[in-house]
Image (tube, rainbow, N blue to C red; front, side, top):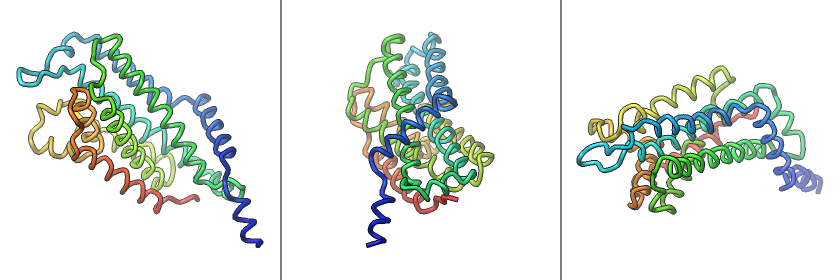
Length: 259
């Protein structure tokens, strides 16, 4: 009976989660690193791309898509990478290093709910940025909205899940913020490269495109761009993202240490 009462006392409630989410939102507002990196930086890039006339032209005679159209999923990928690899893991690592998670485990609120609150705040920032990018590119720079909206949303959600799982892996293994930050940066640049930030996928070699297809962001780029053009997201791309989300999410859960 005593054990059962203790378990019930430790079981988190919806109200506790709501308070944690509100607290994390306030913290994100007071220290707006995630807002600046994950929202404003991609929007600034959108404006820069949109004001460059050459980016509105077709990529080539056999590729009717313009660079501006391709920049939409690319900027969404940048948003997800910055939030997942920089702004999500570092606060978690800092809270573990300061023993806050260990102290939280002695309260009726389980530490897992703090992670859930962090993920929800990061997800809200990601959704805000994605809406600004899609609507801003359409209203101000003439980019068509996704022709296959359900496919686009599914692709964006799977890309979010895959990259957030990667970010949680960084949080699970990084011993302190001095490691978490560089680790996220080391992952950020190759992911963005294979997504086509510096070299468009159409100009990549066959080997590079194959590697891109099997990265979470390269697969997400393919799926979102296909949806924007009116096609069905490739099953391979969806499976790649789902695989990353499932495997990395499971591994992060098993490897995570609260103290």
